Image 1: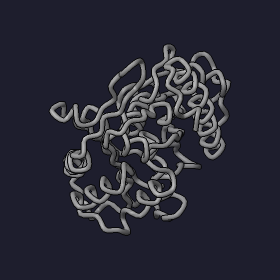
Image 2: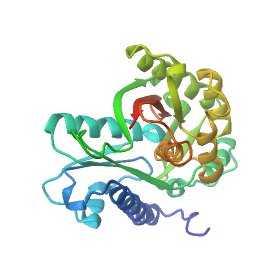
Image 3: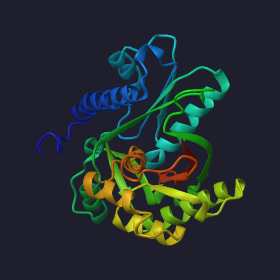
Length: 295
């Protein structure tokens, strides 16, 4: 508890680096093992985080810890908040498409406890209660002609930026530390912007919401999930994996939506050819969606 409540900015940042580095590498090793990929085979690395600033970014430390080769392509995505795992996946898909060389390792990692900011203000009480630390990783590659086709195929992405809501959800720097600002309107704003982006993606592919067999909605909180279900017209059953992640892990910011996808893969048994939708939102105000097909 004393460690989490540390208020010295230098020590807080050191804590972010120490724990961010370790849990990101652990998540990456699990993903690599499941994919049957050795670290030296990785051609690209994309890391996103918003809960601490480093230069060089976490990618430098993670590449060292995993033993990745020096010639890999590297991107660090910063400041995109809870929604960042989806643009991370899009960047990884773009890297594959441009270079034709894979695999690419995608990592979302947040040490939300490094942004703990004790206060009696209602939004900070909520923020301190619901956010947790977490990391998730995925290995993306070009689809092979034969053999293992992985767990899912990335079909397309969509995003939206809504600056008029910027001050409703953001980090501010106060006394050298990150202070979260979380307006009570966020559940409604998040649900509406996410639904707008998801609907645009569906329309682009001439799909309806009924064509989506599995939904991975960012588990930002119980009210967030209730509003998202209402806006998207989703049943309790469709939301069960998102609710489960929040109940068991809290809101881990960007890795959360990938935890939901993992839950679907492990507990939902999606059939080959079924479509899924990943939906998240975050600071900016921004919203993201990814259309996938299970393989």
